[in-house]
Image (cartoon, rainbow, N blue to C red; front, side, top):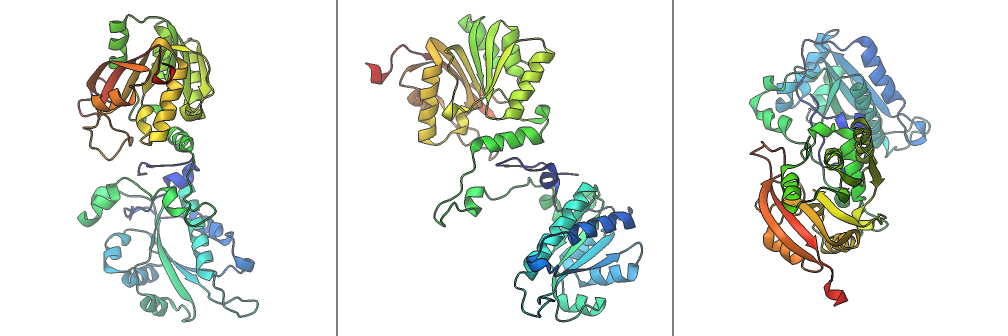
Length: 408
């Protein structure tokens, strides 16, 4: 039932990545008393100001107290009732606005109640349960029905149970339930030292997160064998040996395929998980590959290469400064007359998913004007050979010239 995690900018624990607020609950599966107690115990150990623990919970379990459960359902907003009626447990969270030790206002009470409830939700996720917190309810009605003192503040109602079949939900919820999970970028919500300075996470952290959370076969750029564009280019150029760099090696399949063809291969990626995956694949296939964690924008590679294969790195850099750093590094790493096989998203690809850089032949010709020669550019696809619906790509064969404008 877990939706795919998208746009991750840094590695986080899997339990955080997999938690999501489903509306689809299995009405037939009961949450055991032991499971319920474990979730509530997790909430009990949440941090709070002065250790005041200002949260209180009222638990309504349809299997053990149907009357209380029905009263909570009746207090929910009409739209929430449509799906929450399938959740076997509804938990009402309450905050005490006063410190018990001196009776003064506790302005952190609601904040702390929220901390406790997310602890409850994460513990539920660890137990294989699902949760959905709600803010749509009638506080007065719930207070009266459940006997909650008027001085306390009602914060939320959390549905708890086992995830169910999304297809059984009301049609009005289907789009939201099946939509890709997105979040605002860190640069929008975090400031670095001053309100006017946005926090910028390292790009490498996002790639590391992606490789940690996904099987290599599920990655959209996975190709089990040598990419057909690369294979055809090598055949046309008569390249069968030499020092080759698989830039952004990812799952390692291209590096291994090049090694099997007779190249002396170096594989690099910003993700250590990707590099380790490549190393293990090379060992399993009994080929020698030099594997390095390396960032092309701050590269420590030194070996000059006869061939560099970039199947998805360059198009990650829409920024002019990053593009120039990339070009400078490629010029340094590629031997004169050496070949760069570059595959990137085509400008005609309009999907919102995918890298920010999209190019056509004129773009590449202009960007690679200094120190390079564009031998060939052709339209292609980014995916397996038979994936006609794969994103549109531009495949380029680029030769390193012996001089640059700055050396003439």
